[in-house]
Image (cartoon, rainbow, N blue to C red):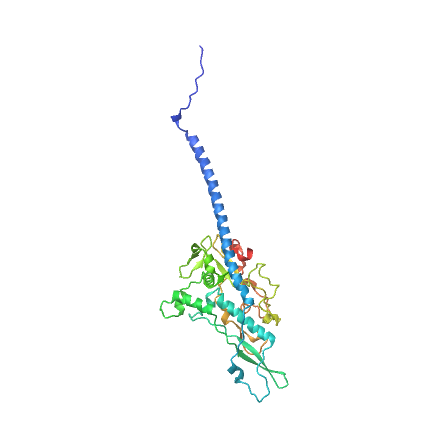
Length: 377
């Protein structure tokens, strides 16, 4: 018997696909889709980083230009003539209180630091007292030296310095009062001020600062796109936000920053006569060069840096004991960007940089690892 091979069945166009073919196709499509999504997400993350770096750079450029102007600010030291003459006996032969050059330099340094505090606030306490009252100019007092008729040093005398608050400080305070003045009486009490929530106050102060300054004749906020402005905590105070919608913060005096941008081996460039008591007393930690830091918390939204976590650090009411000064007359108002009074820097103890603004919280750099900082640009 002769047998013939069974002819192979030819698939017709309307036969469709087998289940195995469909499953293989779906697997291939899902793999390709996953690869595409990973690529898209990676590109999106790269774009967000680039956009945020550009935003931080623009803000830092404006802040840095304003910062440099303080090298040339004229700060005339004026004294109340009635105070000068109050204890002066013209028949005694004693001199009127005299200012030594280093003391005049110290007063100018204090006034300059106070001007920075008033015009470049980075915390609520730069603008208001805890009871809601407006913060004023620091009560700076000079140490005048009285000489006897033989021109030998006789006594010291405290001399109040005439020092009005900055117009920009008043402008900031008025803006805040308009937002939180529930009683509509043109001022704030402690309860009204408490409505300004603390979590983003550094970023909100940065917005205030940028709302008041110009760069190359252009309002600083004009270089910020409307979608980059938000109120993420809903307290009525705006912030500038990064590409992850997190507020961009800033630190005026990041004395605790571990960055090489803070040069602890360089003198404070605003202290031209080395008048800071850290330069005159071995028991006081020396001052060093500081520049502001503008920083985004990056994709994780965690800044991981000390900014305003120490509300007791109100610069304009800092009082140094006479033991940390070259004077024998009581305590002195002393605006200290290095927060040496709280961190052991005026008693011969090694300065605790880890507790100063700009340092990693609890010394842990984990949460700050993805920050985008002006110090790294």
